[in-house]
Length: 305
Length: 244
Image (tube, rainbow over all chains, first blue to last red; front, side, top):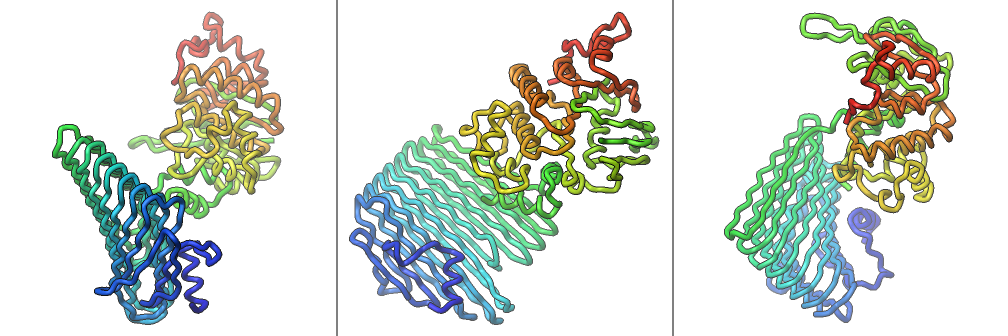
């Protein structure tokens, strides 16, 4: 990796080679660093672009890093990453994508991640998206995540897109089994003329299954955001989605929730709030000696934490 | 010392102009002062004008001889004015430690932040990492607000009706906090209040009514008059009209 790629990697990942964990770093369409462990194997797909990540049953406290970086203007790719997480495993998967585009051609990464989570397995998934570069070429990321959760499993998923991604369409679908719990937190900030659309579709199929979808976003300048969520309660289950957005300047935010109960024992809640930063919040921080813009930055940083 | 010279404040009320404060002139140089008076008399407006949240229509404000009339909220905060809101503000994602650190104006360790919380009777470890959001009660927020003013340690602190929006139980605790603050505070404290027990903590009382300062004197001289309606006082201050 060159210096530019290394600095891009630092933006989206805290991986270091001393960690000894399983890793696959994809740079400009090629796997440049790969390490596997006794419990985690990473195999290149033969029929299409991407990898299979296979985690043995019972694997405890291991990290798996799979960052993607693109520093070549005009590079566009579609990658499939499939995760097979064995029963009773407890792992953290750190994904992320960084694009540096100094050229005038479009750079894009479309990643399709599929998780097959075994019985009573616990997965922590972290994903950071970041874009930079002086060129007029767009930086585009369209991640798709499919999650299949077996009995008693849990997944805690946090996705962050703070800066520099011109256009994103994020689709997350999950099928949640008996006593399985899915927690999703999405953090998005858009600026300039950026566009972000997120779409969640969760089927709560198992008895006592549950999902929390929380979206916190800030839309600045002329950016546009759309939030769609669809939760289907098909058994005795708990579903909750919450969209909370701060709107600024000439931005536009739209939230469309849908909850459908197909079972009398399904409990589904949706909350959505869109509004500007409250004047009293800015005023309070100003009485502590912050300027108006410092106060605004503090409020946004806290909100997107 | 805080000096208000000929302060007037007008608002547009439908077609007419309404004068909330009328030519208020006062020098405040005491340690613990309570401002009281009937609702709509101009107390909270006075507090907001001191903090820079409202600008007077006429008149000037001096802090230690320096004219601060044209200074904004931030500048006044930096010159040494603290202001505790009547309804404390909530923030999503910002923790108690964050707001205390911001109030202190410098990086402080968790232990130091905890000291300020302990001073207002909050068990620090239960609160330090909590978000200043809807999960905190009115009484808890009030105490955090007071902890913030202690962390700031400025020469002037204004509390706007600290008793507003809290239950009776929290109110008992709040009195203790103010009694403690009275002993430890280094600068001047101005408390706007309707509550006899808070007025009782003060050294001096300013009575504001109909947009003017009616009296400014020792607590011992003013309080008996307020508490004894037979002698022209007002039963309002006996505490039977609790403002929650």
